[in-house]
Length: 226
Image 1 (spheres, rainbow, N blue to C red):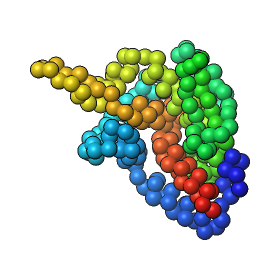
Image 2 (cartoon, rainbow, N blue to C red):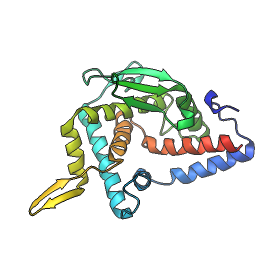
Image 3 (cartoon, rainbow, N blue to C red):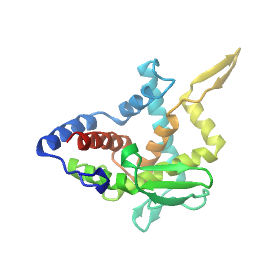
Image 4 (tube, one colour):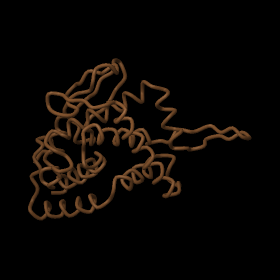
């Protein structure tokens, strides 16, 4: 079958194996997922796992607090339907071809700010959530809303130097020290974890979208191998 249809048509044996693998994923908490993401990010290969875990927790918490600062929002499809106006909201463009790259959405700043939503990956995500019984964490329609919220977080961070500095301060990574003075450094991948924390809080999800992203990767692999 083609994964672009959004239908997770697996053989019974492959479906059983897929469910078991995703149950193991769900047993991990969001901080562990975040630390794993950082560990796979260039420049972090030899970092202390405990430090990566602290950074993951701090970045996710930063995103959660940023969402709370944005305040409640109700749209026609429930909490957080579309990116809000007032932040230089980019236009939303729907595309296909996200499954092959495991892309749900992507924020691009050039030539004009836009959020690209990948309809095939969103459909597959909804199928995965339904198959795994994760609706308590990701209600119907939450995949699209979370993707939009995630990209809104990237848009906020991209456009606000003060926010980026605050995230660096929260992580506390010292890039340079001169006497009593220290300069905080950028932590690759931290903005991604902040965006996941933001999306979970803005959409009222039971888990951050990191879990769903990991399950999607397993789904694509299962479809390729079936």
